[in-house]
Length: 490
Image 1 (spheres, helix red, strand yellow):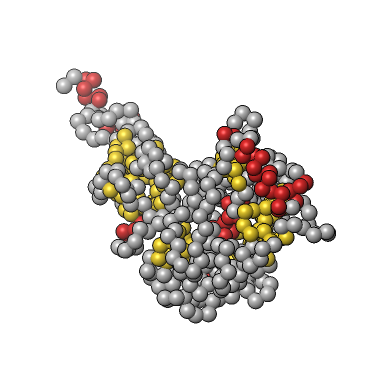
Image 2: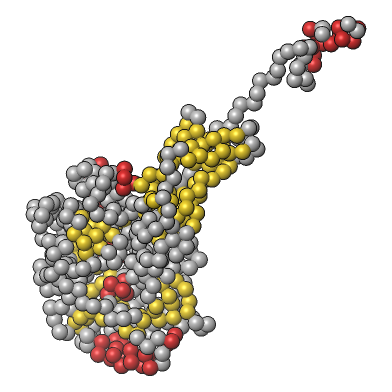
């Protein structure tokens, strides 16, 4: 053995060189670097309309991957998690082996995997979401994942991107778990086209009309300010004039119904006209006539008060001296809606025979009975709610008792003012202004909503089912109000 070979075999020399050599003398190696782990897999949202899109769950690693990390995963329909239902469960995405009618996303079976490559510190788990050309509720599904000793579950949200249903309230906070829908979803609460979940597009170069991207309705962008319209009888001549001008290429302009007009209200505003200035920059803090006459008289018509936050009430078609005199008109371009029935079945409502009713026009699922009543025909004494804390406690109790009070669901909430108003039929003269077949034994009194009254945020908006009025109230006042819960929607 040569001298320099003996030197390299010396223990002292080997120790000195161990930090820079992978082997010394004939054996030994440095410890491998620890592998990265999954720090988080986030929830995911995607908006879908006609074409298929990819929903991406973001994966974050604890550090750059050394050699490769495998993550296994699978998707699960939330409908499957609560058991087999006998009717479509709104809000629950349906998975399938491929996109087809009724399928929301392509299911990923147990054993699907990705490998995060060396050097990467992020990745995505991709799920194909199927296209859809019809308005439908937002839907969710679960993603289960595992990597080594780690595992978890995340939620994928498929957001409706087709016009239809109800406009948003504009109020991003509220009562009883009201943080829901377009007002709060990242993909739809961009203020560039309207406040919160409201969304408008100007039509024609001079912006004479406004398209509501949520409901699909076409409106005058600049409402009339003609003093003669204070009297309801003069409205017909004005409508004829607008149709003869073919405003924005349309000749079917008309007065909106109260339910259509309230769709324009931004309930987050505490002063001025309660309409979004992006879509309606010249809207005034006035009362605006609707096409709805008061059912019990021949002299009154309903209006929406944009000077009082969007309250709905009625007044004489020909105001008398000293009455409120600032009435105006904003027209909508749409076919005249068919009158809805009051005492016979309404085809827009599906009785699911389990205590729930589906409104196919809004994609909302309602409890058939107000809280405190239950069973066929909704017998029992309705609960009178007299505080916000009592309302919140009731919602929590219902969702905690999924199999009984929750009727198989755990995501019930207090409806927004626009959602609850969608049940009102102001042409009814029976006990309550609501379809009596779908919602039997409804009390003719006010029902609470989740929408706070912006000027006095301790007050809430209520809908009065004795006549169809909408107003803000102190929830601790009087003898209390009834409450009907809702789930799903957009």
